[in-house]
Amino acid sequence: MTYENLTLHTDKYQINMMYAHWVQGSLNDKAVFEAYFRKLPFNGGYAVFAGLERIVHYVQNLRFGDDEINYLREQEENYKEEFLEELRNFRFTGNLYAMQEGTLVFANVPLIRVEARVFEAQLIETALLNFMNFQTLIATKASRVKQVAENDILMEFGTRRAQEADAAIWGARAAYISGFHATSNMRAGMLFGIPTKGTHAHAWVQGHDTEEEAFRKYAEALPDQVTLLVDTYNTLKSGVPNAIRIARQLELQGKRMNAIRLDSGDLAYLSQRAREMLDEAGFPYVAIVASNDLDESIIFNLKAQGARIDSWGVGTQLITAADQPALGGVYKLVAREKNGEYVPVIKVSGNPEKMTNPGFKDVYRIVNKQTGRAEADYIALQEEDDVKREERIKLFDPVHPYIHKFIEGYEAIPLLHAIFVQGELVYELPTLDTIRAHHEEQIRLFWPQYLRKLNPETYRVNLSVRAWQLKMDLIHQHQE
Ligand SMILES: Nc1ncnc2c1ncn2[C@@H]1O[C@H](COP(=O)(O)OP(=O)(O)OP(=O)(O)O)[C@@H](O)[C@H]1O
Ligand SMILES: O=P(O)(O)OC[C@H]1O[C@H](OP(=O)(O)OP(=O)(O)O)[C@H](O)[C@@H]1O
Ligand SMILES: O=C(O)c1cccnc1
Image (cartoon, rainbow, N blue to C red; front, top):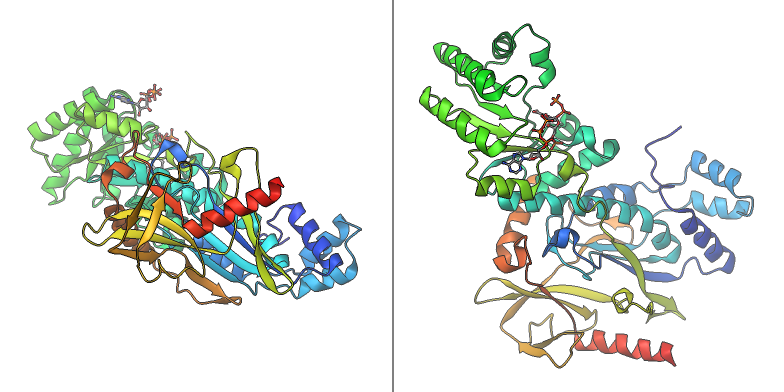
């Protein structure tokens, strides 16, 4: 059994469509798909794109090996042997464009564009969305936590509550992209180079005759990284006083205790009292770590209550994106090859929000040269040159097209980068620290009103006049 080959990590309907294309002789026709989401998660003002590194590895390693072929043969007697033979030669030979990880992204903006034989473009939909949706969701959640604790140390503690192993490690990576400082997951540390941190569990304290003995033995074993969990019995009556005793003993050895950790009770009150006790005892340098089902709202609230917490361990709520467990990213056909040329296609829907934006398009971030801040994302047909030349363009509200403005003196930053061209990887995957730095820059690119957690302003995402006109024309054609 091979677990590593992700080629069949797809929905059966993709293979069915591949088969039907093969039968009908249309497998080599080119298709253009775009991946995007329609609604921002967590009622927020932005999302943080993530998932590209995993997508790159996935696309590079697409192969139907013996196990995959045999399984398909067993599963579906309709699949002809020649089709299965065709699959043996399957490689991704198309073009794939994507946002850089860590980029701030918005609803209805293409985040990934795939231009490939329909045979290939169809297969990869499921996995692409799987990776993009999960990692983008967690990176976004982490960014919200980061926003409320900008100057504190943030540790990702979620593995034990994550939806299985892949979610734990890719979630840890997504959190790091958005500004977390460390993860408790050692494998994520090993695979991605994320710094790891850890304290100790209640079991360590319970496993000794007294709390003080537990603390002392722990400090003897790891004198340079002593963070003591003080809530097993009574935080203020025994935990903190015992931790202070250990801090004293460590000073006699010329060492400094790192921190105490609070994991239950009223974290605002306990942190204030513990801070006083530590300061009075002469240990102002001993930091206070808090954990216990934390999320951005609780952290924000604790800060408003004057909590004296320096470092936050955030697990369940982050790794499971508990208040919104899925990002609804979709993958839609926008153009297809017909008689050797691309024709735009649309999906018309009773729900106007679900109507797709047809045509082969590019995305630009329009940055005001004077303020250095982003004004809008602008989606134009690929052949449109005015935006590429940074000439005057019209921004207008697609729902109320009479509300518009013309802008010039802007910089148009193309957001979709070439990742694969004709099947070749042309993109050098950035280091995780480069991605993190890119994310920080992205945060600075936007006015705070778009980023705030509560009732953010809606950032403009506009179609060019031509892209909008194309959409209107196709809607009218379908209505007729
Ligand atoms: N001052 C505070 N203001 C708002 N929320 C808080 C405050 N202190 C703690 N919390 C949060 O309230 C929740 C308390 O959870 P819970 O009722 O399980 O209490 P607990 O102290 O963990 O109890 P237990 O002893 O069973 O572990 C946690 O999510 C915690 O982060
Ligand atoms: O609350 P989260 O945000 O998910 O953070 C992780 C939690 O996991 C641990 O608890 P657990 O009860 O599993 O183990 P313990 O006995 O070490 O406290 C830890 O003490 C945190 O409370
Ligand atoms: O290091 C810790 O304190 C830790 C790690 C994972 C989960 N809970 C706590």
